[in-house]
Amino acid sequence: MRNTAALKAKDASFATFLARKRGLSRRTRSFARMMVEGFDAADPARASARAIVEEWCASPQLGAQFRPLGGYSALLDSLAGGDLRLQSVVREIRWERGSVEARGECLGTQFRYRARKAIVSLPLGVLQSGAVRFIPDLKEKRQALKRLAAGPVVKIALRFRAAFWEEQDPEVAFFHSPAAAFPTFWTPLPMRAPFLIGWAGGPKAVRLAGLKRDELVRRALHSLRSIFGRQGELVAIHAHDWQADPYARGAYSYVTVGGEGAREALQAPLGDTLYFAGEATDTQGEAGTVAGALQSGLLAARQLI
Image 1 (cartoon, rainbow, N blue to C red):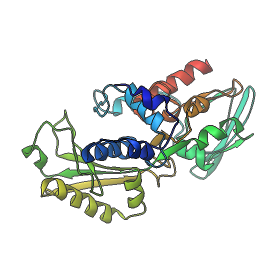
Image 2: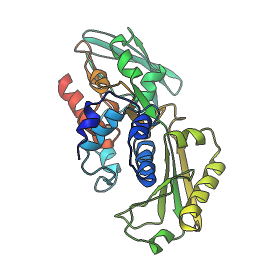
Image 3: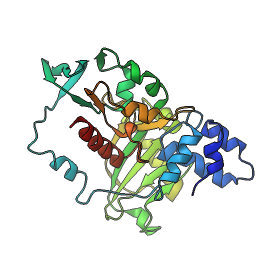
Image 4: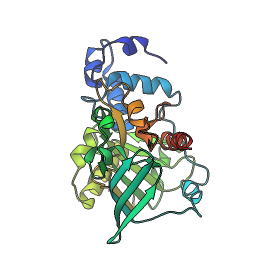
């Protein structure tokens, strides 16, 4: 699908774009808003309609689930044997052409690492927060950072005694209830296991910000009851608020109104010394995904070499 009229029109927020569309059913409007808030983790009042249309046009399998064979541990296993510095927090990066120095701390001990070049793959929210100081400042990146936003997401993993949802439909990948606090629950298909992943993105995640774990569980179970009329026997849970995580400060990125070209600007290398990667820099239609993050890293590595 390709909405060329939307691509040619002056950019506006997705909320404005939706309000201008005549003849859409209430269900269609609700689904479109759900996709922007949930799938894109975006605020429809801020998200660029043009960028959303381009993204959806570039994703023929939009909404499909893809997982690495053998699980995500396969990606981490590929790093085994590398020189990894764990629990090391970078606070400052000093750079000039042909020289980079990263300063930070590891378990209370200060460190400095020097190199001729470096790849910066910090999450968008961390870059925007200034948690890592660059000297000199990344003035070439300021406008790009202003035109992108880090979408908030609250995610909760629920393990039950039995996969009660399979009684309703054993082949469904996700269930949705637009009015619920957690509007989307993903099943582990194609794997069979008594797990559900509750997902709240965009404005719904903002409303959940700061809540204690017990309250998040209560709202998640209430959301399940609104879908199934029951909640099952809960065995274990894990909840994570990505907007509150200091090493993420959001789930993944979206383009705000008037932000065309921001991803390309953020990805552009500086002085043949600093290279940039991460899902927010992907320009191949996979921003906001693991695939986008990986291919951006490969691109940055090729540029550096």
